[in-house]
Image (cartoon, rainbow, N blue to C red; front, side, top):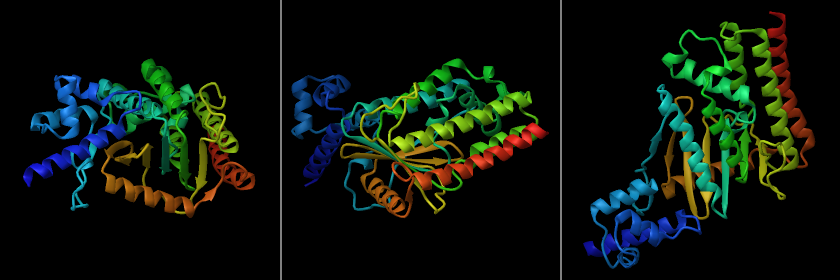
Length: 338
């Protein structure tokens, strides 16, 4: 009986691996290379004829970034494992964080069926990355004010302090995000964090000059205008500000309900992954099927209670972005008059 349970779990694991791989990648080749066995031995493991060892299961979970509960149909739905992904004040670790986002998106793009639903407490970071100085501002803010990185102590904002490679990675992240069909759900507070960060830095004297502060304000306005244009077209735009698809791949909703934290649900075919933010910008990730299904249900309920402001919803879209721009204009006037 124990053998049957092991084989059953093994077959579930193999099925999840097949679903998680892009169609152009062979699972048997991946397993043969990973476990250093022949293709015939890999096939026997895939069919459950040869049981996986504990070491092989560990190697598979590590390679494919899975936790054991992500593929075992346990009766205890309260037990969910998360992968812990965090920024760090160390410059290499900080860069590795953004490289991991890039790698995740690169993988998502390879799937024929893919989509992202983003419940946004803050403006999704991808949108900032279309504007180099605004990208540098966000990177600077995270390092100085959140991570307390030593390299940024006693420094005023200067885009040159941010590693140029980070700006390039951020641009690549945006390009990949632009290639994935997405639904974003914003609330009345979604744009506030970026605006308040600029205001705080101005009042704290962290901008080197008024011109620098106004440049960041201008780029926030450009970002918002760009997002509004995407919503109008129902299509994401790349760095060249041209649509990335001839069909609709972007929808924007306005929720009257406070979202609480950033929640992202990624679907690649039948496989889902949930990303949750914590401690400002760090993320935890799970592929637990039950948890992801609950997340999917919550997000779709949130969508049903929200107002679509993309596509033909011109009046609602205009009012939503006008309110944000009025807040931006107040901050711009405050900086100009100080």
